[in-house]
Image 1 (cartoon, each protein chain N blue to C red):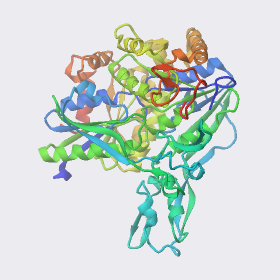
Image 2 (spheres, rainbow over the protein chains, first blue to last red):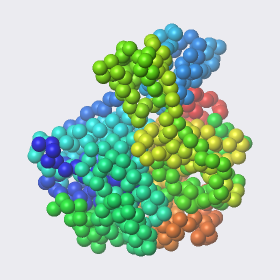
Image 3 (tube, rainbow over the protein chains, first blue to last red):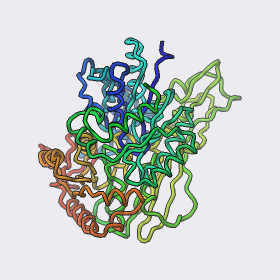
Image 4 (cartoon, each protein chain N blue to C red):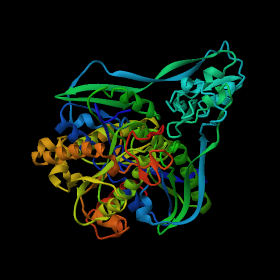
Amino acid sequence: MSAAIQECVIISGKGGTGKTSVTASFAVLAAGRAVLADCDVDAADLHLVLTPKMITKADFKSGNEAVIRSEACTGCGTCVELCRFEAIRCVRRPDGKTRCEVDPIACEGCGVCVRFCPGKAVDFPERLCGEWMFSETRCGPMVHARLSTAAENSGKLVATVRQEARRVAEERGLPLIITDGPPGIGCPVIASVSGADRVLVVTEPTVSGEHDLERVLKLARHFVIPAFVCINKWDINPEMTERIEQTARKMGATVAGRIRYDRAVTSAQRAEQAVVEIDAPSAEDVRAVWRQMGFE
Amino acid sequence: MGTGRNRMIIAVASGKGGTGKTTVAANLARVRGDVTLLDCDVEEPNVHLFISGEPQGEPEVVSLLVPEVDESRCDGCAACSNFCAFKALAVLDKRVLVFAEMCHGCGGCARVCPQGAIREVPKRVGVVETMGAGGVTVVQGRLDVGVAMAPPLVRAVKAHIPKTGDAILDAPPGTSCPVVATLRETDFVVLVTEPTPFGLNDLKLAVEVVRELGLPFGVVVNRADSSDDRVTTYCREASIPILAEIPDDRRVAEAYSRGELMVDALPEYRPLFEQLYTDIVRLLQNPLIAGVARASCPCFMGGTPMPRGALQGPHC
């Protein structure tokens, strides 16, 4: 019954505010009831704490990439003119002939050059964009992924991870999906939150944290997802914490709590433990946020 | 592409978010003075919170060309939707639906339409704002909330890189398209990390990206303390220069939280950033030690990186 599954996505706007540390603690608190998903596919870190044992792995192929067959290219330059992504350039070869070449990193795989090359010299093979894994952890099943270096389509890889996490939850009758989201507000974030039941925004009491929180809360509102906010390292700047909490409430979010600045968070990370698994002062704060989220 | 002679384009990046990219970029710009600082983290631009200045002119609206279908001409043949690689067009009951938020703006649909029923119209994705702050010109992109596609806006920000004079680019976190769009055709990349397992893991991913792009680079370790030497060990073993270490200093975190630049709030850090700039210039003049490596490119032959300009492939 997919309707009964609750999906909570932890995001931040600004990077490095403690999303993954909070997610790892939530995973421990939800152990046995949740599927874990790491949707920060271009810089995944959750596996460093949950140390998953991989069960299966699959290639993630998405889209195509233009490849010019040098022997068929006449160097006419039509492709260079048509490409909107500055991905093709003409190179003069040592033999004096001009040939066009695609920069695979800049190519977005639109297929315009493939279609309009007068010499039909452009191939369009499928593109390998990464891989996704299904694993077991001490807290339960986990779906995670790795985007290929400098690859496209992170949004689609995120969608794949979420879809697999949901499938596992249905299969095992688990009521929760806890998802570590990416920073920012763009494509992979939109792919991570759309259709989720709630988001938790982890922010910090800094001018950047405040600025980025407003943008990410607007995004949550845009997609009509109930938003919760918690402030990590709140005691670095208590005044700013107050201000951010007011802003969050004004924007319709629920303030789920404050987490104190705690060096033990880094020690926990180094020991491959979640904060709530060690005797850290901030563990109590994280548990309180979890209770506020209403999952107990 | 910059030659490093009459101008230098430095990008500040990191795999992991929150390691101090903006701190390094903004403080470097402040100590350098006469420089253009471009905030390419268009999803969450933060540079202006630390270096603000007088707006120069009106914000430039950046748009992407997306299809608009003239229904009087369209016969529902679906040539456009069949062509679109991004599923931005669909045909239902002989009517074309446009999903502009999926569109990459390639223009293919308008070209393939046999009826000439598609024209391209601009769809706003964000703005580029320019500010003058003392000697520093700040250019920032700001993606509209709800827009997925950051790279076109990153390219619009980079169009403001001056023809002469140095530029510093603050990159977004991660390793995917917006980061690649930022780093392409820069002269040097500063990767900022922190001495934690997350920092190290994401640094390795970022190193793969800059190596793929064939760019010279070095590392700045932020919040450095003596309790974890895995980042420094990794850099030593991978022959990556560590350009600077910014100590783990609570005063730095507090100044940052208030939006104060480190070199203004704590002037004792000024020499660190001056030295960093000098070291980058020095490394650019001697790229043999800057970790340039792109296996598929002629500039990287037999495991020995060639000097810049000696034998340049299309990606060098």
